[in-house]
Length: 216
Length: 420
Image (cartoon, rainbow over the protein chains, first blue to last red):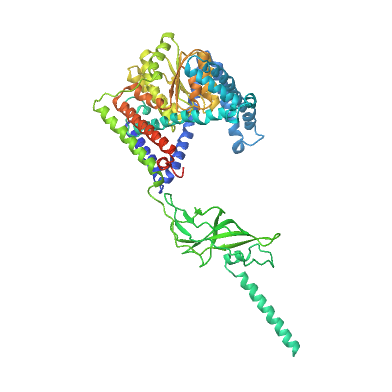
């Protein structure tokens, strides 16, 4: 029964979800919203599982004096500081001027932005490796990237200003993005859509069940 | 005598004026609306301008919907000299509930429109409609006035919900066809027929990647994406986790799974635990192997980056749905020389993984991974069915391209989903 009940729930929910796409009549037209709401509610309760797990692992690291125990301490302090301040400030904790919003604006946001900003450097290092002309495909990639990058900045058109307009770099870049790039992306999307249908069908029929915990 | 007659005449005139005024106050609303047109006092509409009301008003229940909507159509108005239609106003009256002749305003359509959907109807009521054309008249070089002309009353109509959305019939046929092929090949595979499945380099390398970690005596990190269990990519990711965990358990290699969602934590923990039991090593499983970091996208990326740099795992798997954090994670893994295998169905993140990882499962390969790794006939059969679907799409694309080249549009219109 431990396996059968989840399989039954999965099958019924999956079939209902497929049906609701084709049946506009009530109650099917509202089912998508109902299930999304239920998922949000379950997810909201489950957040405590995550939080407790994080605290447990962090406390354990400190107790065992593991090599990175200091980071675990930072996690615990941050967790309790933000939680206590959030609860202490009540319903308006997100209003401007509160300690919570100060922490959000001046601690959390800059940290988050810093992580995002690192991406710029990683793009450069990854591009450097990807664009090395080792073989025909990599050379094609390098040339496409060269044309697109130059075509996206004004200097591209200045360099090719002597050519007819349709051969200027901005137009070449636009052609690469509109045709070969879109065609490639759509091919991937078609494969993904087929994979999604196939995976969903396997899950609904109970053929794929390892996500329920283990084998068959 | 003459004075008395004069007083009687004045009193009579005053009474008539009062009567007219009172009558005006009690006129039905649409009559008032007509009176309120912005024609300046004293401005006569020239006889040469013959304003025409909207004609051929057709009303019907909006098809393929959940009810509560009626579609009103009318004929395009002829272009007049010195008179331009500004917009159309749609007026509605309930047959059962309203005062006879009392129409309420329900919406407007642009001057080029010939159709309007009234989405505020009650399925239990019957309605009639009128379409009012709002004209802008050029009386002379300096005077422009606005006036309205109403159509006749439409037939009666009620809205209702339908049990099938025929605008999606092509999707339905596609799903049925694809499901049929998948089920057919699953049946074929079950009956023992050998199926050819092409090699997927990324999945062939899973054993090698786990083996490398074993040889080096280092950890394996498995990152199941940043999305929750309602995302099929996450389900595919945790499904592959089960296979990877089995191999890791067999090789006695430490597998660590930091997750970003609580529900993924619960699922992944169960899967890893079960995988260890399946290969006869339940004692080797430890609760802290699968642990939660944070729901925050960049917080999660920062947490994993820190762990990667400090603990320097030999192998890292990225399987699931990723956004901007994909390159941050993969480049950090690359910088420590870990062997990296990624898989995602997010087209915008694929180039980053291709650039930074050793192997990448592109889109559908992520969904095929579980079947490929398990080699179970039932799962492999579904891959074959999927391939037939792909062949059909390729043929359709080819036929469509040829027909479109020769200006035959009907074939491509079969693939349009209206109302998306």
